[in-house]
Length: 80
Image (cartoon, rainbow, N blue to C red; front, side):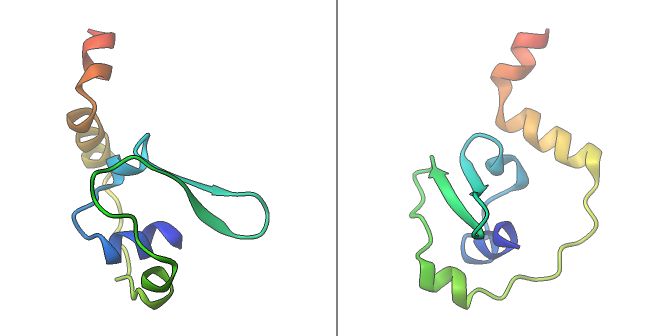
């Protein structure tokens, strides 16, 4: 999975970064990075091809929601 390869190359990324900051897309010929809205350097095609992602642990949906809301405080303000 491309997301796991990206996280293997840039391990400080969180799942929340993939909502609005790193946009992945697949137009039918395989997934790719459509947008990279981070100050961190975008991984090269070679880095992604060579990446060895760890098997992801089962995601805790509550932890994912908390991480997303912490990373996007404007959403919290909008619903308050």
